Each structure stands twice: as structure tokens, then as C-alpha cells.
Image (tube, rainbow, N blue to C red):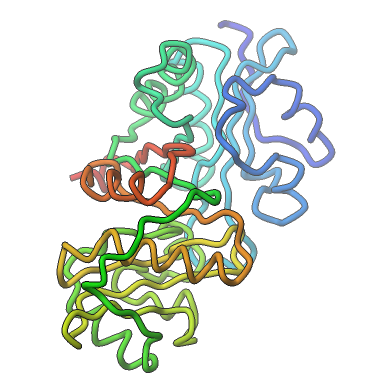
Length: 298
């Protein structure tokens, strides 16, 4: 495209960003105007590619107010070949002082859906051309009132005794099964949700449930009922067999508090955890394929 123009959005041009039809309306995400109103999107962090006055590419990086991290690419759509998208990304990266992480939001089970693949392949190819490398995939799952499995009676549950007990058990969990909002916790407060969840969730012991077998802790789960959606923020195990019942207990806690929907994020490669979420009544809402700067991909 010899007439290609790539530039940042100018304040007042919000309608230009929205003039490009959403090629994948299925993943639930914030609209651009909503992101501007909340302060996460900014014109200087939004870039467009124009050809003949028509928008053929758009990219919006997000950074909530007060965040300590770097903006990440949240919206990236193309109506052109991947090289156009790569040109857009390279120009923005130069302005930012280097490439930034990209979270490609896709509908659930996107690899099985040819119509989604046809749309998704171009921006992901553009990201690779611009020096980003794929590093993992995260699934968002949702429970919306499905009856929960009947407890086996092997486990009992109680609130955490306090922050000290949560910290002590988290230190014993090598790799948590569920972490919802891990990326936002890191970008906004520089917190690793896997190792220091209380720094993100707060220290209320009532938000935590401890699973016990024969009186000994075998897992813990931290919930948040007043986030964007009621969610299972952290779930870690000392006994893998407790997974399903701890998930169900977390949902019960949130449902008893009035939640009609509960969300949970899980790495796509955790096949056993995904299966247990589905057995508990969760269904996949969307996927986020993570692309990071090449220097961070090794």
C-alpha cells in the first residue's frame, strides 16, 4: 500500500477508531469509548493505519490510571495483509521506546472455528513480523448458575485464620492452578499474583477458604466478589485430589454472596484443571494468546 498512513490517534477522533467494524465481536471486552472514559485507553497509546482515507488497521494499548507497569496491546484489528499490521506495530513500538506485550483476545475454541481463524491469523502474523513471540495461552471460563457437584465429604473448609496463614500456604504451593487477573496485577501494581496474592487482593481472611483433610490443609482459594466480575483469583493445591471440591467451594462462597456469574482464568496447557472447571459447571468464554517482545521470549 503506497498510500499507507500510520499515526497515533488524535484526541477527538474516537469515532475514527470505531469506524472499523469489529471483526471478532464474540470475545467480551471493553469498548474503546469505555476504555477512554476509564483512563485505560489514551489517544497517544492508540495507533491507526489508513489507506485512501479508510482505516485498515487499529491498535490500542491499555494502561489503567496509576499503573506502575508498561501499556499492553489490548485491541489490534486488521483489514489488510500482515505486513501492514507489522508496519503499524513497529511505528508504535518506536514511539514507546520498544515493543510491548500483546494479548490477542479470541473466542473460545478458536482453533476449531475456520471463520475465526481467517480473522485471527493476520494480526498474529503481524505481531510475529514486528518482533513479538508467542508465549502461552490463557482461557477465561465462566460459571453461570449450573448446579455444583455434590461434596464427597472427604474435605472440610473454613475461612483462613488470617494473612499469615494465607502467606504460609501460598509459600508451599509451587505452581497455582488458577490465577485470574495475573497480568493486570503485574501491570498495575507490579505484583506477582502467584507468590503474593494478598498484595493484590487485600488481606481479608473472609475472602479465602482453606481445604482440609483429616484436619490438615491441602489447598486454598482466594475469591473476589467485588472485582469487574466475581472471580476465583487464586487457587493452589497441596493435594491435587482436592481440586474439584475446592473449586466448587469457591463458587458456593461467591454464589452465597449474591454472584450470578463467576469467572476463572487458567493456562490452556493445564488440561486437568480445564476439565475440572468444566465438570464444576464452567464454560470457556474466550482465549488470550500472549505475545511478548522477542528478548523476553527465551
